[in-house]
Image 1 (cartoon, helix red, strand yellow):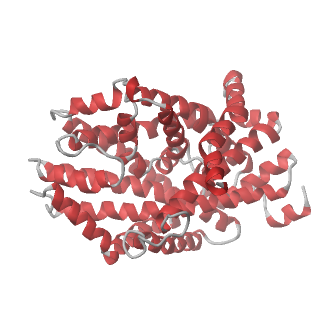
Image 2: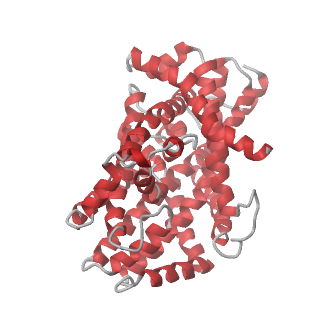
Image 3: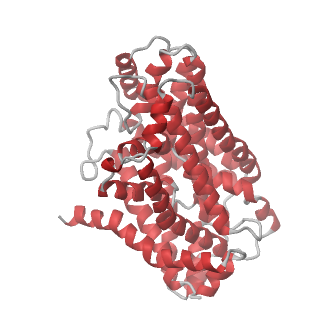
Length: 468
């Protein structure tokens, strides 16, 4: 390896015992942590709408195929890089570059991974703060008797209240910093409770709502095949959502996977994470859709409005609406926090590997994200009309750069490094007990399928927008 790389990156092949104690500690904590990072508020308000508007069960089937063809191969590549590199994203990519015999400059992809996680995190924090505000409103019985118009007005007033939004954003970031600073042992314990609790709450809400007249309509909306509503655009939306919803390229899986127990089968790990992510999205739809469909003049829609405008009005009109609202917004906050905490880990691990104490790295990461969150807060009021990139305000720019630029570039690069440049024997060794045919199928999809699809749905439209 080149002298430049050796001087800038240390490879923790034999990690000291005290460092190991701060790293990931088990198979299921890894699954829950990676699932928490993959699951986001987007699943709560976008996925059910996409399924219903684009063919119902047919869209769901195509989405599953897209996840298998695109998202799972890239996730496995990210997991493999983390397992081989055994460190933060910069160290992991540099280590795999060394094994592949390519330039040390490939380690810059590790910095893009860290940047992607940091840019999306403030959006989750601010919107998690929205969940806290609406949870407090539900606990104060402020939804009782509220109309849709009043709910719309309350939400608009809330978006103009910078102080309240900033306060809740600060609470979310402080909670994340405390959890991350406490170390992986504490973090593993918290996520092992928090993420399963999300599923338990959602399952309980689905059971509670199954007696509603509109529940059967929600089932039909999501699961009945409607070919007449399915178009080529539906395929592209399924591909894009499958890539984005699993958090491919955000560095969480790469960072954690280097500290998995020996013998962990990578294919099963990714499969379980993908299934859990899909399950929560479906449960979210079965919770939100029966409620939204109870408003005759309001069709189900994608976006935060469904969670923070339509649902409060529905809760306010139900006999047990306050109790349902409490549990629903607890789940919203849990989803946000379970995404925020793992997304801080790539930068914190990087700072640790540079000699910083873990608590200092957590404070630094939290400060950076809290500061970016100021811009997100103001994007909904004072800076709403301030255009920074192609007509986008600050918050929209962070979302666009992360989802449409950094994540696809990172995903494409990982496919090239692992699929084309890394010796096959190194990849095969990392797979351990996984069967030979599954390994060959994954490698084929990684080399050909995933890069073509990433180019088609992300890179080509981005280049057209920039060049035309």
